Amino acid sequence: MNKSKSTFVPVGLKIRAREVRCIDQDNQNLGVIDIKQALEIARTAGLDLVQISPIKRDDTPICKVLDYGKYKYELSKQNKEVAKKRRENSVKTKEIKFRPNTGLNDLQVKAQRTARFLEEGNRVKITIVFKGREMAHRDVAYNTLNQFVELVPCMELISTPAMQGRMLFVIGVHKHNVESKAS
Image 1 (spheres, rainbow, N blue to C red):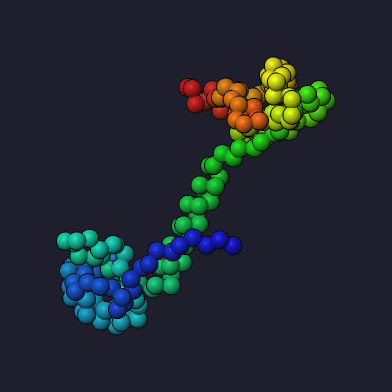
Image 2 (tube, rainbow, N blue to C red):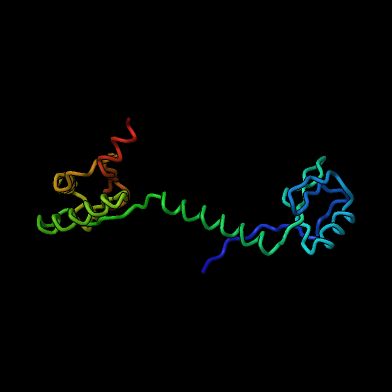
């Protein structure tokens, strides 16, 4: 499992400031006090002194008296929720490949798969791969591409067909995605 880098949060004696703006466990602002006094307040409460704001040049850091383990747990829950929402909202690009002289039945099967990808909300990259002397007959590939696009009525092309090496590709999305963005 690939873990992301965690940010360092100074706790207790690792806070590198002489004075801190301290907030106690009841969210009461104690004002700017000496670090030793803030550490003593945290120790008597049986909790940790955690720096919750980064140090800026002319500003005193904000520290809070709280349970550090619980704080780390809450931060990890928030980060997981943000990552989950980012994954849900991301659009994936699926790729469909075929050759310029692919038969009609094979194109129909690939068209059904393409329609399913589009219904799931994915973008589809359609790639036609040339081999050997097929490069001399690009018109056949363009005809096959047009035939394929007609087989998928719910697809709208968002790019023009382009050559990249020995491949002709175009990107398509679901028609309702294009209409909602245009509105």
